[in-house]
Image (cartoon, rainbow, N blue to C red; front, side, top):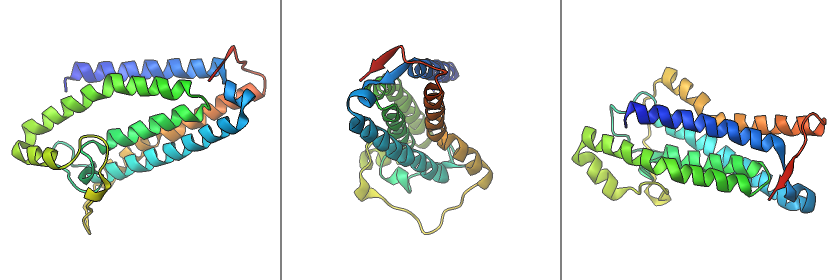
Length: 202
């Protein structure tokens, strides 16, 4: 993956995140007004997906901390899918969208993910093919690219981890939880009357 593309992706992601927070701060959930049970179910499912996404990212980090680009990791979550970090990120992103108690934000996030991450995944897999050759080809034939196949799960009895790198990865794995916290902070400001809803979204 080119450094230029990676920087552009990160910049666009940050701009999109800022735009979403502004949109959320200026809008409200129509479900919260017309069908509170729907809003409650969306929020609850969102929290569940955020938890699964965050724990999944930590699980992935346990296996790749200190090994990325040096070793072809095929154990743990990487035994079920070649891109578990992106799969769990997908779940976390979907969960954050549902935590807004709307269908609008999850759909926006899905479109954002579909527009950018397939290319990211292809670029990374091309890099791995160059690094590991036939070993990666055999791995790719056996393990699906994105959606996990649980029956393939395999974990070793022992696994060596670099604790310093793993500690850094933990913080990045929890950013979905932090975003939900920001959403709740914005919701609290609305309850205090410091922010108003310019429009309601389904």
